[in-house]
Image 1 (cartoon, rainbow, N blue to C red):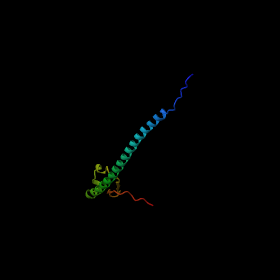
Image 2: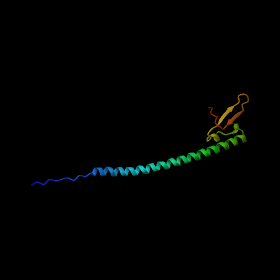
Image 3: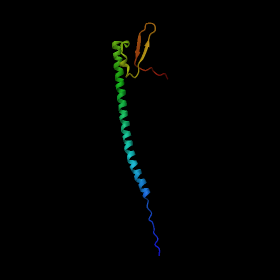
Image 4: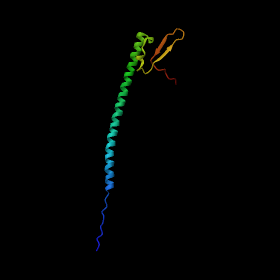
Length: 105
C-alpha cells in the first residue's frame, strides 16, 4: 500500500507580499507626514518673507523721500518687490515709484 501525501495549502508568498506592503505603507506614511511638515514650514517662511519684503519696501520709500531717489545705491534695491524709475527727458529729474501700476479692468 502506497501512502499518498496530501499537501496542505499554504500561502507563504501571499504573507511575504503582505508583509512587504505593510512595511512600504509605514514608510510612505512617514514620508507623507514629513512632506506635510515641509510644506507647512515652506508656507510659514513664505509668509514671513512677504511681510519682511513689505516692510523693507516701505522703509526704502521713506529713505528715498529722505535722500532723493537719485541718491539711492543699487544695493538697497535688491529686495524690493517693485521699483519703477522714470527720467524726465526735459530736466533729467528721476522719479521713483514703489507701487505696481494699477491693472485696468
